Length: 200
Image 1: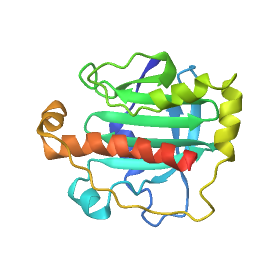
Image 2 (image 1 turned 60 degrees about the vertical axis):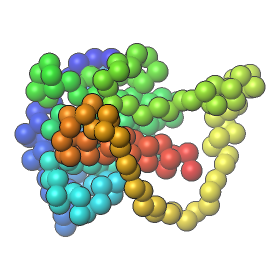
Image 3 (image 1 turned 90 degrees about the vertical axis):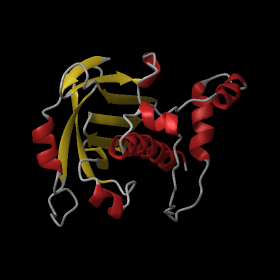
């Protein structure tokens, strides 16, 4: 991974009016772990209901796709901690996680399979033990990927409502304030939805 620094004030300013009537697409540049950058066309994510978004305007959640390749998708959030992101592309996933305790706007951009998770990091598991067992039954990842892509749940897009409850320990771990806990939940659910949309 590599450290990157976001100008949070400028980023929040450019994102504040996304999805509020403008017909001009919003393009945001994100730093890839490899050292290059990629442009993404973004819009508001519906993962945070309007009523909650209005009560917590400092939590901004978005989704989008790479300007040069619509199959590469992004889910990201901007909140009091900084910028969190998940990018899914064929054969790879890379993340951006904030490190506000070290420097305002500081984040790490990294490929998810190449970094050890620190217990304090927000995260969303992509691989699982079940996935590993399935992998063992096939001679190559390519074969598994081909089978996974062949599955379909139809052409109709479904919207589901989700209620999330957290424990007191989870709340304390994430700062103990409603806004900080909601930020952590929003990041996790935004990433999960990005994965589900790809897989289903």
